[in-house]
Image 1 (spheres, rainbow, N blue to C red):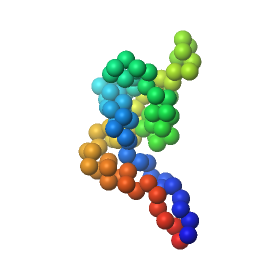
Image 2 (tube, rainbow, N blue to C red; image 1 turned 120 degrees about the horizontal axis):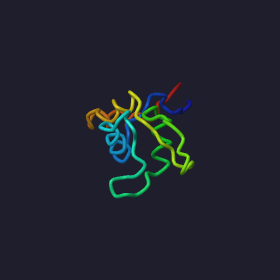
Image 3 (cartoon, helix red, strand yellow; image 1 turned 60 degrees about the vertical axis):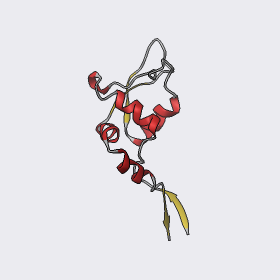
Length: 99
């Protein structure tokens, strides 16, 4: 019996969902570099969103090349607006068993 990661996108965590939602009202779906408390968004949050297809790099930041400027994808808009109960149910299917 093998255990493999589920190939389907997972539901965003509360932190990821909040970050994605902040891009909904921005021109072009631009995602913020800083959280609502003025702290830099954790790069792991940004990378995870890119890996899940919720965000994509937009353009390089010449002043801060290590800061990744991203925008929402259509899948990211869906993930940000999906009802929480549906998202919780989807995230429960992280692994599947394969015979």
